[in-house]
Length: 84
Image (tube, rainbow, N blue to C red; front, side, top):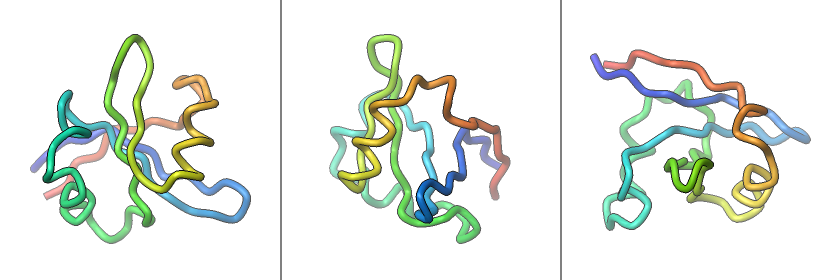
């Protein structure tokens, strides 16, 4: 079992997931493979979120990253998930 923090979001008809990753993941060459390890019930695309400077830095589809960057992190419906 692995525990992750993330959110499943539908905004303006687009469903996607946001998943919190460890510091340094966004600069790692393996960052694109992180989403592949998530269960298929996490809507695609998957956006990676790394905590930085009291907020988050996001990686993924540009339009969704721009949307998330304009939110306060408290507006994202974070939940803890256990995945195997």
